[in-house]
Amino acid sequence: MERKAAIFRNGRNQAVRIPKEFELPGKEAIIRKEGSKLVIEALEKPTLLEVLAKLKPLPPEDRMPEIEDLPPEPVDF
Image (cartoon, rainbow, N blue to C red; front, side, top):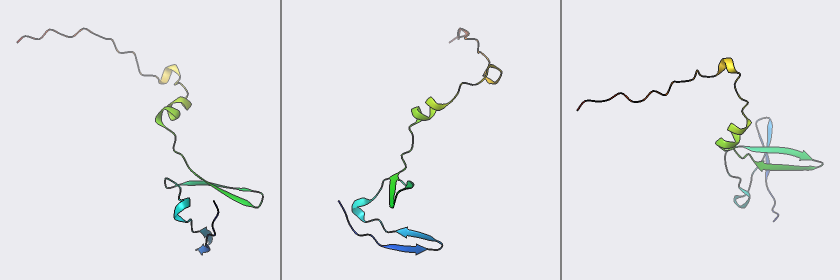
C-alpha cells in the first residue's frame, strides 16, 4: 500500500501527517534511516515477563532475609 503524505514544520522539527490507514498503535514509535528511506515502527512495550526475565539476581547481601514459616496459632471460639 502506498499513499502521499504531507510534510510540514512543527517548531524546529519536520513532521509527517500519517494517514488513518497507516496509524500506529500506542503513543511512541522508533524511527530510523535506511539509506534514503525513513522507517517508522510502533514501539512495542515489553510484557512484565519480558522485563522480569532481563533482571539480574540480587547479591546475597541485598536479598530479603528468610522468613520462618511458623504453624498457625490455635484460636479459641
